[in-house]
Amino acid sequence: MDKKIPSLNDLSINLHLINKKYKIKDFIAEYREEISKINDLLRQELITSDGLTNPVQKVVQISQMLTEEELDQTIEVVEKLSHKYDYTSYIEECETIRRNFMVDRENYFAVKATKSQAKIVDEVTTIFELTGTSEIIFSKWMDKILEKIQPKTLEIDYEDIDGKRKKAKAKHKVASMSDDFVEAPLIDRYHGINAYDSFLLHSFFDVYQNKWIYIPVKLIISLRCDDDIDDLDVGEGKK
Image (cartoon, rainbow, N blue to C red; front, side, top):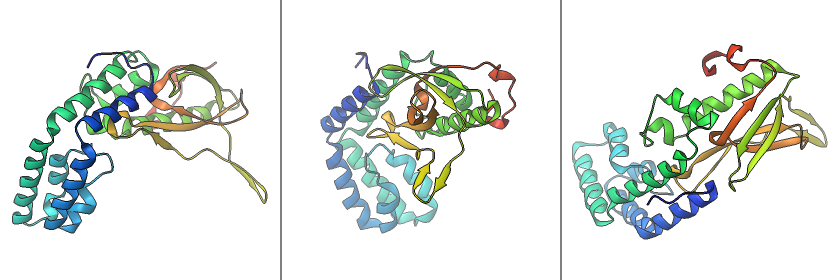
């Protein structure tokens, strides 16, 4: 699968088709049923809504909470269902399509910044990358920058989830509340149907629109500011 993915929305559509191809809903249902027979804690801890959390990795994480017999039974279930649903090929296809999506965006400012933080080159399946940890760190860094340079602004050039290139002029703004009015940052949320199209949407106050808007942090193409951002001391998020 090497076709170009024009937008984040298209990435999600393609991943949905992959989920359907490998019958991931059936995989999840059968996995939940089998696991719950062994230990109810497993059912609660190991099952995700998308089936993308690697079962083997999860078993390792929770292994200390299981008896040796329960662990053996769990591994048997994982091996049986992974073979039945060709889980390895499923993960490989998901990795490939995400890699294809990101390769056309490897020169984006945020992609370079988060790769530097994660200390990765080509391996997109690291926990740091797929859990969005690097995006959270980067978004907090940007918030600190905006607070540091106020009342100046950051010109943000970014790709929105529909693939359109957009501009925003972000500035630091303190939340304000009254009996009948609230103006505050939007709650962070994630776009996506599974780990491979999960992108953090962080809000910034856009001077152009005079309101808080969501921006896919990973898809920030460039930042411009009157000051030299590299010289601003903003703690561990500093680039």
